[in-house]
Image 1 (spheres, rainbow, N blue to C red):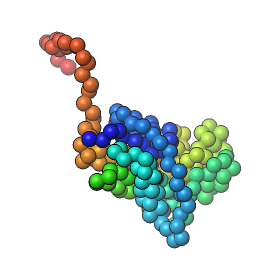
Image 2 (tube, rainbow, N blue to C red):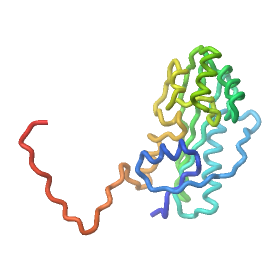
Image 3 (tube, rainbow, N blue to C red):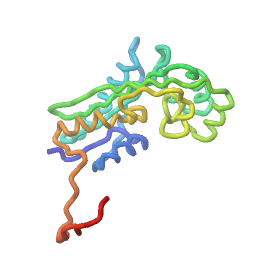
Image 4 (cartoon, rainbow, N blue to C red):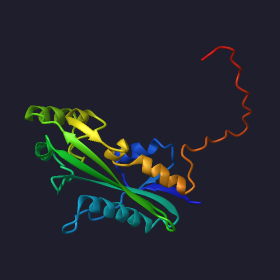
Length: 212
């Protein structure tokens, strides 16, 4: 049995997603070079970095189950990175308006005996929003820490025309549907069993004669 589950990220978005599964976990930030290799595709980059981050944490965590993910958006075969500033976010939104952007979100579950990985693909078609809408959006929601410069779980949904996905959590950064399947294969029950309270003697539920 694993000593603990570790999320290989300090991202608040990924932490909040993983908390949905009611798991007890630690989080550690991997320090890896995220530069793409020559001619590397967005999907290939996401897969490689997710694995690299998990393996980095595994160097000091020999009996943990490590969850790692990485997301790379691509528009017209060009990889998009986190803007890092409001001006760069505006430039990125100008680049993607009216276009389809593919978000490749790789997930890697590291186990020293049997690791698992997959890539979730989400296609987002953005509206032809105006410059004023870009400015208003960034005033309300500073999304320059997100690749693509928008948050689908927030006001950023107003910038979208369509979203095609098999897992909406993939777009936020951690594909939970794939992760739950991986965890079950590793013997972790989701939903988890409730902890029994010591010394308690619960009474049988009262019978109801009324209809629901």
